[in-house]
Image 1 (cartoon, rainbow over the protein chains, first blue to last red):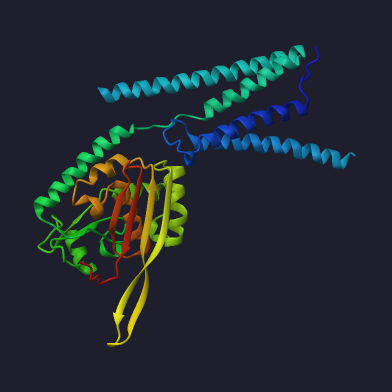
Image 2 (cartoon, rainbow over the protein chains, first blue to last red; image 1 turned 90 degrees about the vertical axis):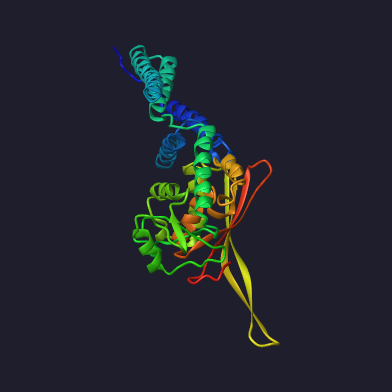
Length: 72
Length: 290
């Protein structure tokens, strides 16, 4: 049986990008600066999750750029 | 009994949230495993998505909140009691928020109320003696714990520092972030340092004008204590004197930061009660205020 992961590095990068956008937009819209001060959600953790996903996506982009530069 | 019921409901809600998170995570991992076994990309996408959102649901928890109406109901009755007590004891002076050097315990926050309207603030030694008494009041004035004392302590705990280690610029920088972002007590907060002029006649023809940076203007928008502050307008010893919990906490913070006695000069609340503008005055060591 051939056990290979069916998604490429770029597929995961795309998934990370979509998740990051959703989380970043949600985090921004739920910010207390827009008057949303009564939502029962830990906004700090939401922001941390959004930032982590964004950093992961940007890391995949950095890896891709490095690959292009090193192997033109 | 009610407390037990509320705790059980909260636990049930948390358990539901955790169960959904765990179910999504497990389902995601199983789908990912199947995707690897069958080399199919669609279950792989579904599996990755479920795993991500499962982790996020487990990580992002709900926070404990109390309804604003409950906050107002409890705070207003306490302020009314404080107002009645001060009126019955017949202390008519303007409340002065004391910096740590006026107290035995530097972490404590107290306000001094003189008996007379024209009463002056005694030197630090006398307030320290007064604080050590079982009943901290005498013929000249009384010491009391202001309504915002514990809130100031919470501010310091959240910031991880004390206001005594800050200066006014630091306070201007940190307080809006603390109240809006960290504690979500208001949607906007502006702190401005303003100046006042004092005219002193040097001789009959010359008057010396001195500019003092002794006033701080604070504008709070959509505060969690908006209704409490609006109700406190009817209480003469609270409104523009001791202040409602949030204005009182800011006065405590200013007194601690500047190291000088501070009073609430004026306080205005908009008609809808959403905006509160307060002027604080930092007093000189031997105030000549009336």
